[in-house]
Image (cartoon, rainbow, N blue to C red; front, side):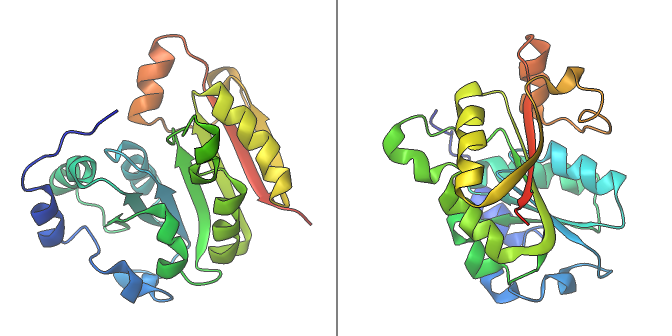
Length: 214
């Protein structure tokens, strides 16, 4: 799906106090972006920001960074933040492939992947955010106890993820193929825009939690 370019989006991001410019310069020092030094959670591919904004509002003792590649999408989140600012949340406009240039070893406590691009063609498998290539990146920035939480409505992507995680030498701690009817994994669940849209049509939501083996 081609994203519609919104004139002025990049300029708005550059001028916004809620978006971190030149994130590479913050590597190893992300806590300085927030009023308090607290565990750092990131969402990769945050879209319009509903999930991470709700998470930040519900968990003031955690610092959050929302990562979105497309400026026209990130602009929507910035507009929401202007109406309801959160001191424990910042945004970054960047490609997830650059994670290791932006975060230091052991700097991130949790990574959220919500309704990521499935990249359905086999030749693009390494671009999927649950590929072994991306888990190598996650391994280099997460704390030893860090974990990945992944939600999707795409069964093929979910099946791929379940197979790929052990190949990356990680462990699937828990998973469900029907999140909203799973009393354990759905407890405290905060929905994304896509999640609400897809589940309202009766589509099952898949979720898994992964951590390092051993």
